[in-house]
Amino acid sequence: MPMNSLPLGDLSLDKFLAEYWQKKPLLVRKALPGCLPPIAADELAGLACEDQVESRLIIHDGSCEKWEMTHGPFNDETFRMLPEKHWTLLVQAVDFWVPEAAKFLDQFNFIPTWRVDDLMISLSGDGGGVGPHFDNYDVFLVQVSGRRQWEVGGVFDEQSPRRPDTPVMILTDWQPEASWILEPGDMLYIPPRVGHSGVAVGEDCMTCSVGFRAPSHGEILREFSGFIGDRLSEEVRYADPDLTPQPHPGQITPDALKKVHQILHQYIEDQDRVAEWFGRSMTTRKYQEENPVLDTYCLEDVRKHIVVGGVLIRNEGSRFAFQEHGNETWLFVDGRCYQCPEIQADLIKSLCAIRDICSDHFSGSDEDLSLLLDLLNHGSLYLSD
Image (cartoon, rainbow, N blue to C red; front, side, top):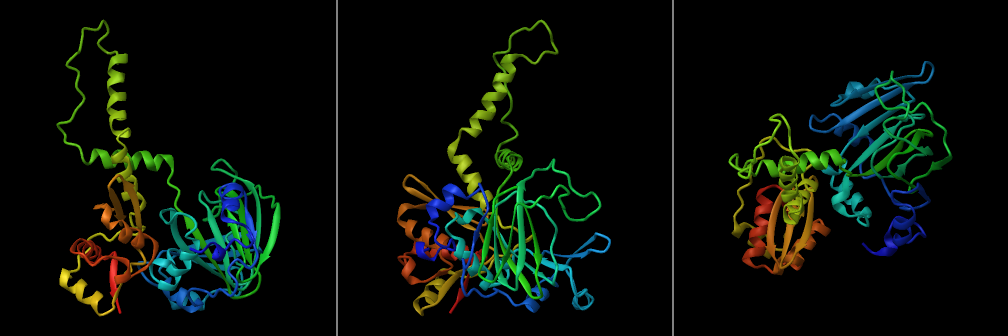
């Protein structure tokens, strides 16, 4: 992505990363001048009516400080019955279903793409919001239509007081330190755990939230141990052929603990295993199909499609990343790992950087076509004219 097109205003990427990323909030006026909503309001509401789409509707009654949250899928009647004010529709992972929303995320490729979670879009009536809260991940909040007033202040954690009588997390000890009204094209960056609260100012308020993945240490340990454990034979067990007599039969001796430490270190220190697990984990789809059906394209289908000028497009819900390992480049797609020779490095980097793949991006060799074919049959790519 060209440096002069970054949505950081006059701020350089180096300065943003050094002084703001995961450190303090940043307001950028006209970060994306002239930007348009990646989806129309009625289409967003229609998306929230689909079974497979994660959505929430939050309504705030200010007269009695009551908060109500319902989960989708919704229906037309839901939206006909909305009050005039104080409501917010939240739709997760809009980029998975709407190509324009996926392209919107490309403007944030200055952060590693494997860190991106999804594009959530909120649509609010006048006064709509979700109350003061914090997130455990970074988020860029881009105003794409209407206006929203944002307040930020303080750093919070799971011990911070919150209201026990609401279905959404609302901080009780809320002391805003700054406040701004964002217009279309303005952007606010919020680091993890920084409190913030947004309220729509007028109608037709739509905000795009670019959220990032940040696995907890607990998730990392659980997932890695599961990855290793699932690949080990039941016959690989704790062993102590050097056992010697001990005076207390119930004692777990230092020697026994040392053996357990050695078992754990054996796997943690295996850098290739850690690398493979992490690549697979960070590219696992946000929403997995229970019984995915493979397509049945053949090598000749791909070759003919490319010859006539066709392109292969990354599935909007798929995740791509790569690692360099000596003379190999490892491609990770939707939790799968392809260990490819160095000659395919350019194709792999293109697959991870751009959404539309054409003949300019690979050699046309059988190896390249076979890789594209496998991605196509797994649904990670699809054909387009």
